[in-house]
Length: 160
Image 1 (cartoon, rainbow, N blue to C red):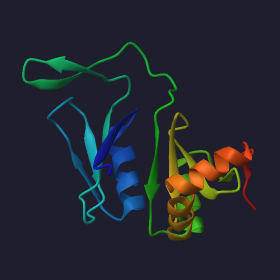
Image 2 (cartoon, rainbow, N blue to C red; image 1 turned 90 degrees about the vertical axis):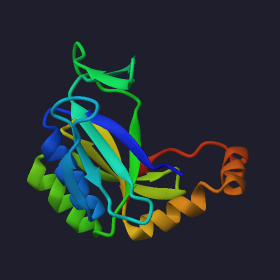
Image 3 (tube, rainbow, N blue to C red; image 1 turned 135 degrees about the vertical axis):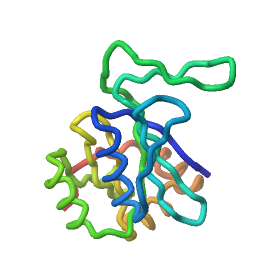
């Protein structure tokens, strides 16, 4: 079970506020690790959090635990996350349009669909509506995953 994750953003408060809106929760400041950080609270049964640090923050070991230090620059990375929402597909698209963030719906090899929301155009969040959440849960069961691997790769494609 994933309890929280972190990402970075040019405008951590704005990004945390949007992610909290998608999760049906609230954004608050998050000062323990790096100044200017915010956190999106899902306000769900497991208190899911998305920590949002200032762009380029590097997490390093400190004498009292993790410390966030300014990094040299912000680059794209392989880090991404899937986030469930009770919002509709159209509501997620409306938020993306309002924020000016790229968004598109894709099928992952015909197994499940995701809304690819590119936070500030640089960080990938896969948004799953309630219908998509069930597709995802069904698809990533170990037995289904092994079956799909045995059948060979299927391409990703834009969803209809």
